[in-house]
Image 1 (tube, helix red, strand yellow):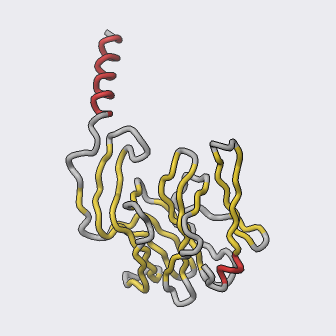
Image 2 (image 1 turned 90 degrees about the vertical axis):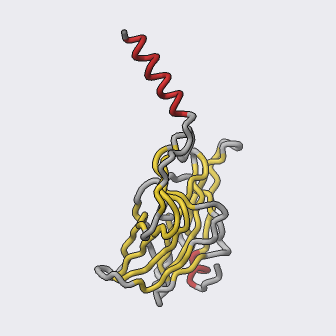
Image 3 (image 1 turned 90 degrees about the horizontal axis):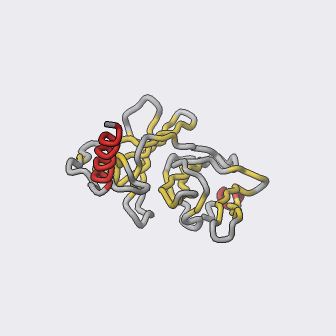
Length: 195
């Protein structure tokens, strides 16, 4: 009896492993909030404004529910529905995809009044790929294009970077070398908008 149940479960699992994406994708018609972070009297939202919700049953990093499509960052006053500024995340080469809601870690890395936030995507089993965005004193959102893509050993979608002296520090484990590699961002250059 146990052997029969085990074989039946094995057949079901193997059968579903090849199913791929579900047939019932849901198109997004209203913006969906996937991330939120508060700073002062404001909130920064990561919203999916065009895309779909789908379930992926193929084995891999995208297994399970996925919200994929076109995303934007939006600044709103806390408790208000009016958008003060928005920025479409067009820097990414691939379609952005998130599996669940998460907190945006909005922080002022160098105490200059300009807030920074990292947004990430799956990279591999031991790192994610990130891009850094800012909200200036006029609440306008931008992207630090000169920083570009950061590879960081974290599975969070919006981690905080550690500040050490005049640098924001991050690290990634290099499997090929078998060692940690550290990177730094000069936070004094952030204040000068040199990125």
